[in-house]
Length: 158
Image (cartoon, rainbow, N blue to C red; front, side, top):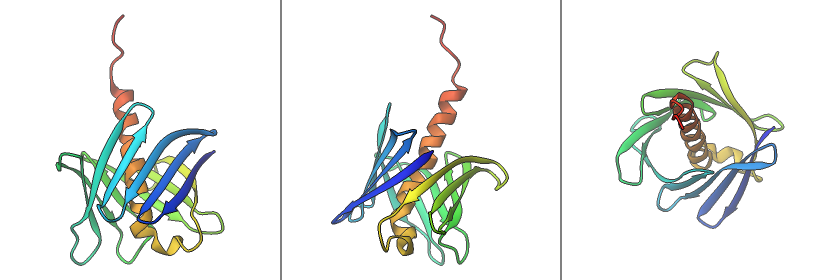
């Protein structure tokens, strides 16, 4: 079971993604700087998340050097589903916020489910999904992008 744990302090949000009780992704989001520090087992990155939308929310995703590597948009009049695009790969996401919130990530279309996890937000956090969970959804898409790249790498001969 994939579970997301949310810990928050003043100005910081921390998300931990666990698979089978093993931490595979840590995200620390700083609201004041609009940065997410993303850590996996093999890699650490800083993602800069800037709102560039005018009439709808469009978040630009930049690496630590300021180079745009993707974007996130929410579907019209929705705060629970949209698209994350990282290096020309599209991931659709849906947050089902019933009694136990779940995040579903699809590749390209909503018929190709590639990832699912349970979310455990603190009280009152569901209404602030766009602001707080955006960094985490972007980070999971980035993590899935890294996994796809690793799977495509040819094995090196020993």
